[in-house]
Image 1: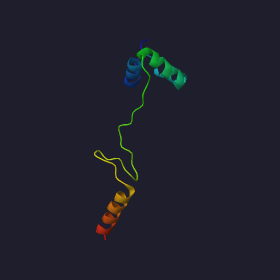
Image 2: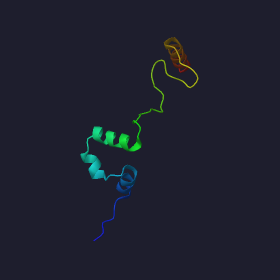
Image 3: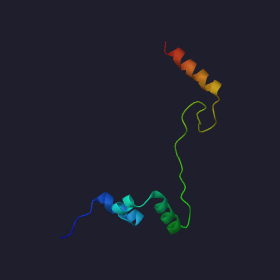
Image 4: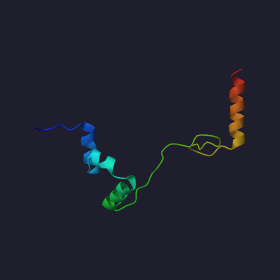
Length: 80
């Protein structure tokens, strides 16, 4: 009897070279070492989203806390 594999599990197997069950049993540190050895390069984690909060990082420049406060005050005054 042939068992049909779920598409997600099949994709995981193709991408990682291991089944989902194997990945669940392997500690993350061990899997990281396996991938780094296979790719001959360290794993890097990159965030593609800006930081949110005071002094928000904009595309063209950073805003100072005073500029953020002034923009907030203006927005609140306009709402009255």
